[in-house]
Image (cartoon, rainbow, N blue to C red; front, top):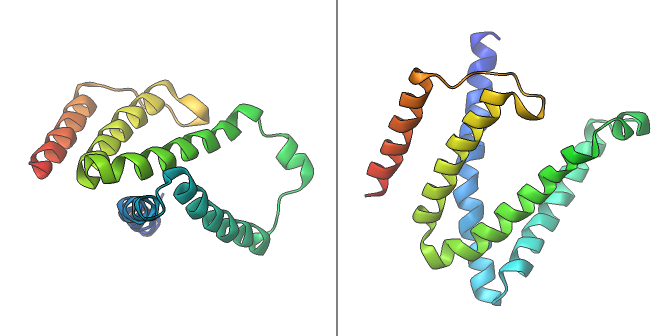
Length: 148
């Protein structure tokens, strides 16, 4: 991968990461105002579905054979998205958005390292060694210090 692609990908993901707490605050705000975090999450996800469906049609839908070739368990990613949306919408306004996102980030670091280590879900395998463990510990410590 060349440097320009890396910079582009890093920039996209930085913006994606910035969108997570913004979405959490907005979804939580809807949930508090209407008194129903599940309704708030469904509303936000309905808009997300509409936007991504338009993008899918605009960029060319896959053929049925391609869709049928996907192992069914990969679609359980939708369960993960729903769990995150529901949990952050409910917990964020009650626990504090920074506290909730701190826990999300620590969970992401641990889960990403384990997924890489075992090469789960078809990802490239990258073992957890001492250097990676130290890096993860520094990231968690940094998150903890930023929270204090």
